[in-house]
Length: 125
Image 1: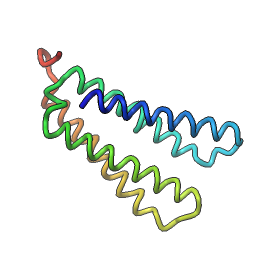
Image 2: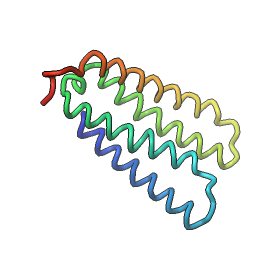
Image 3: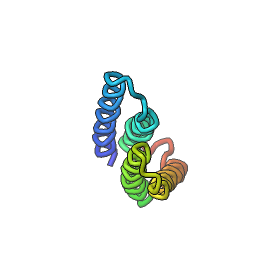
Image 4: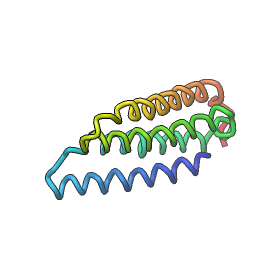
């Protein structure tokens, strides 16, 4: 699980950097909120969660670890695609953004629960 999250995080990192390069080259920063969310919730958060799950395999193997993985990895693309569409004038997608955001938030709350219950001294690799 930890390695999967680190690999997915690396994909988000490339997407975030490419989006940043696009904005820099075009001098249009319309997508800066998408860029920030991809880098923070995609790259940084998932990479750190992947490291936690790698170091503490009990957390990775728990049901909470699996729920966190899927909520975060389903919610984030939904939220980012919705935000992209909103930035391009599709105001009706706000509920889609909210659904994605709620899924990511729930995933992060489950991650917190998982860390509090399964990450402890002596449980490391």
